[in-house]
Amino acid sequence: MDNINENAEYLSASGFTRLKSELVVLKDKKRKEIAERLEYAKSLGDLSENAEYQEAKEEQQLIESRIADLEDILSRAVLISQPASASSVTIGSTVITKKEGNGSEDSYFIVGREEADPSQNRISNESPLGRALIGKQRGDIVSIHTPKGEMAYKILDIQ
Image 1 (spheres, rainbow, N blue to C red):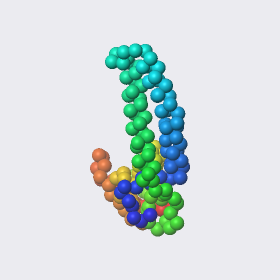
Image 2 (image 1 turned 30 degrees about the horizontal axis):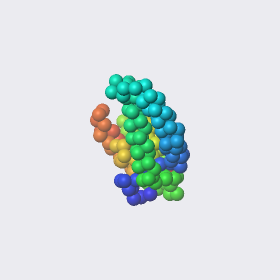
Image 3 (image 1 turned 45 degrees about the vertical axis):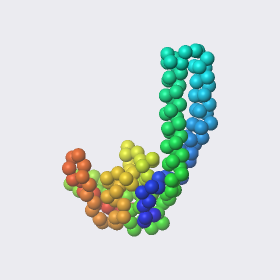
Image 4 (image 1 turned 120 degrees about the horizontal axis):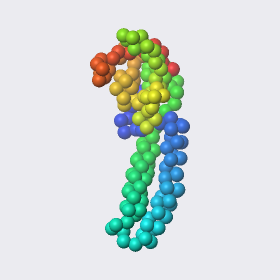
């Protein structure tokens, strides 16, 4: 995965499955629920002053927008896997770093943006740290600009 396609949406197998399931629920269940709500609201009469109808229409727009987003993401999905070689950082790598200055060690799993969750140390390949780490090797030091100033990280291990 040395060549990172900027149009690709990098997903783990579990992330792909989760988004595919969400899409099925939205298309099969949520669309039907909204259609039923709209029919009921129409039966109440004057649509111009019908708050229930307006609310259902807004929810319908949100659902249709999310469906379009999910279809787009899934159409561009590239499944990530554990790298065969851990000589350099790629999407799918777990990187153990040591923050220069305070010496704290952290482990980051590099994922696509849809699966990023900094609270779980899952960082996007598009984040400043993710971008800086991609392609680097053990022993390399990467610097990123943060609101708190320059931060440097030494790569201790790549898995």
